[in-house]
Image (cartoon, rainbow, N blue to C red; front, side, top):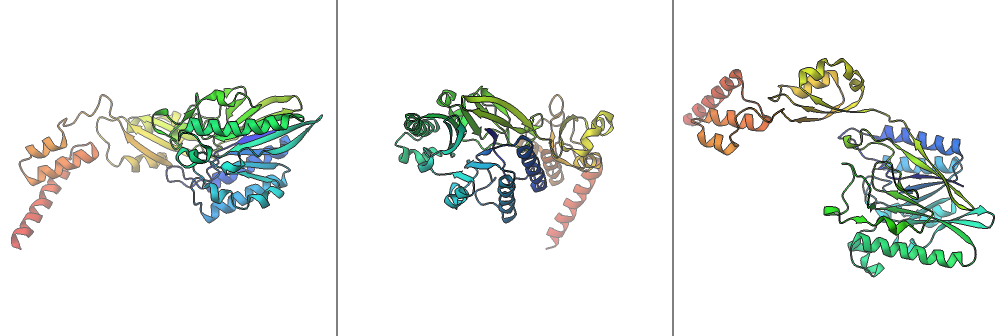
Length: 386
């Protein structure tokens, strides 16, 4: 049996203000092609199907299309909810969908109720879905302390109890889906932090007793152990993911247990470029031609913030989405604080010039000083006439 481990689709998410619905549709094309080409039996989605608890109508329609295409390609689908999903909304109609080969695991009551598949030779595969467990919400139902580690340990206990019962009458192999931050995982800027100060991490050895654990939440594809992996998100959702390879894991389960685990890679709809340097160098560097067609995050290192920086950069790099300013050697202008500059100002025009430098990290030009002085004088003159 072949299982495709995916997670963190985040349907409906934008990328620094740029819409991603077309890119997500391209991902679904790649997903369906992988399922058909590899003859995948089961597709797992380990949480964060949607990017928000109340997705838009077009986003729900895209998910509906995805399920139809995957079932049409011959795969059953097992889905658990993530911290971005509304478990109640995602789980709506679960009993009916299950009859059509789409299995939803969004409730704590269903943690110990697996989706089962025959493996042949008298063996069976049990796939368990642990939805995202918000400790304060589920701790009471699970009779544990409200911590990520405690609620996850309790969920794993429910699964182990069910497995012991099933294994008393035959060979049962196990796959567990969980949307959590496991110890040893490498995060990126686009994940919502589950708890402050690393308190959201759960011990990796909680999953040692299962044949394979399909994790969701972290957006980088990574292997924490031979049997515990993150598939990562299918698309990049922050510039911190610029060097990540996006895809999934193709997992083989045989009557003897876990077989080969093979990475699947999907092409990015649009490249990401993270550039840093002086504006004139960036605009003239021929090696940066590739970035002219990429989403760009640019950090300028000029001693002073260049005028019309975004406008000039977008003339060459039209899809510049993020612009930052980090002058080499620190800011070389007036090093006084804004309060100190205001206190030392001798007239209203100097106050205006000090504010201008404070908000844009560049002194006012002679022309700007002259315009501000004239504007202040005109305002004072108008006020005195009244």
